[in-house]
Length: 41
Image 1 (cartoon, one colour):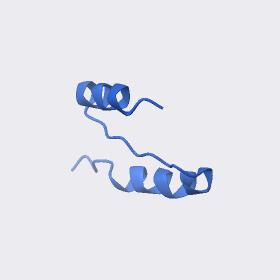
Image 2 (cartoon, helix red, strand yellow):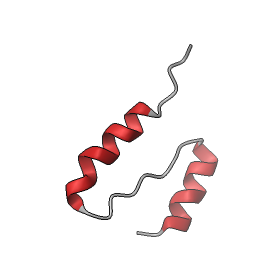
Image 3 (tube, helix red, strand yellow):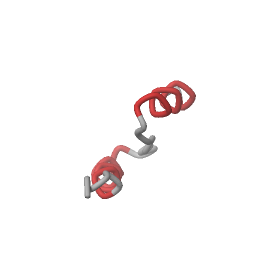
Image 4 (cartoon, helix red, strand yellow):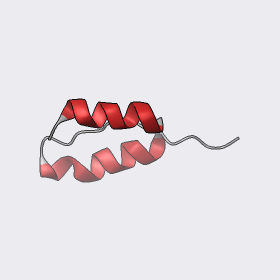
């Protein structure tokens, strides 16, 4: 994984980077990403 490339993409798209160093953390990273999404209100 290239963190610098991911950071560059998120600067362009307005997103964020969540990294799961352990495959067992994928679900936790996914839920955190969903919880950080803007609500649109």
